[in-house]
Length: 454
Image 1: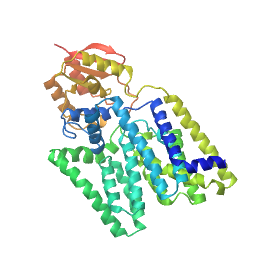
Image 2: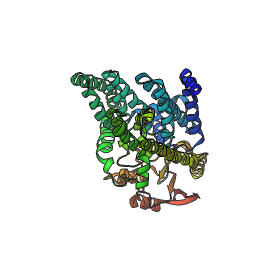
Image 3: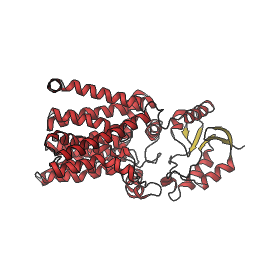
Image 4: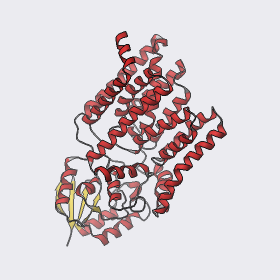
């Protein structure tokens, strides 16, 4: 044991390297979630479409803008999406180790990293979504506050907010940390940093002529309408809830019995997972996971001070959670990329082989990455997702039908309806238009390929 401790103490960076390589291998060998929006939105932007004006997007712009630049340089496709996602995840690994080592010590940093990796994977981490991009930014905010660099903390928070609106939850732990210092000076510099990053972003949005569209979709709709929209609210089962919050429950127990982690650190972990409301998905936990890992690492370092019962509860609990993670790994090991099922690839190839350069298509009730994979454009501009909380907005269906009638897309791809899915919105207006003007040309799995009825 002493030899192992000596080896770790002398070669911490080598351990970090091995941990990061293991994390990458885990991600590469398990199912990747290629969210269609992470391909479609940059694809349309690179085709000259403007976000918010030509594309209905309920999120702030920095992630898909950065992704668009990445695709512009390296090409657009699922491989590039994986590379971008995995680089972001591994950078978060490294940042977590570096920050914990700077604030605490190397031993704690290693334990936090080794805990973070399985947590990051289990909570839907193998796929790019806005919550994943928040994790490194929130770590930087926390670090800047600990170092009393409030200006840079404000800059990082501004970047986080323009990555996803749920960054607003972190203003509460930020305020708690500012209370322990010169509150007025801290708030002033934090606000200054936020303004310094916000003004250029808003200026660019204004110069693009999309400021009203941005405020409608990202602010009025994204913050005011979407959280309470019909079909958007999704609650977990009791079992799902108990498993997901178990690590946080351990931290609360440790706080009560061992006075570790600190209340402040616990707040960062708790508010970091509040993006899970109102639509329950494990990947919404991602911004809080670095702090949960740090808290668990602090708890493990206090293991010798625990009572026998507390040690037993901790060990049994961690063992059970590792079993849950192992089962998740087994289920997803070697699985095909999500949203790139064979029928999606076949339908995309069919459309690509049977359309010319200027042909437009329409995809309804199935994954919109068909546009990207078939290298075609939607017949509807501005593009509206076929989700109920979009299509159900007043006047949207009528505008969509008017554009379909005018553009007369050569092909329409429709997925089979499943009424058990809460996000499904069966628009009878749009379906009635399609029935009157299109006939089925081919079927690929559960997808129907329709062509104009001449």
